[in-house]
Length: 97
Image (cartoon, rainbow, N blue to C red; front, side, top):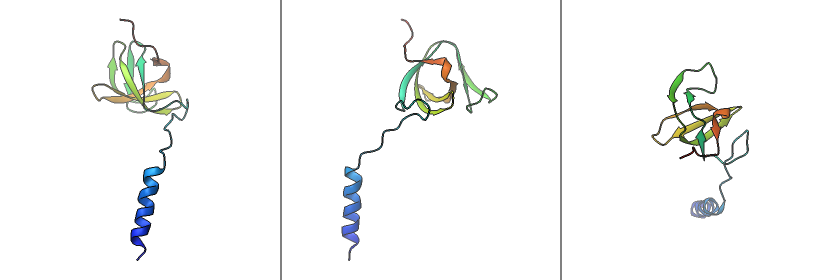
């Protein structure tokens, strides 16, 4: 008997409750967000310097930060490839034209 009322209440609550902002665990900056690599960069399978290198970029590229872990950022390139990169290898500044 009360199922329609419960369902309606839950549906309305889901529509009116704002999603909490997603922020990086280290920087408290929004994720995802756009950054750029600082020249040459290695992208790893895990956030560890000893982890397998998945691929390498020889020049600056636009990336999307998906996650943060310590001094590492999980990123996605425009072509869909993903990997972990050291935070020191990223910048907010786009490459010079």
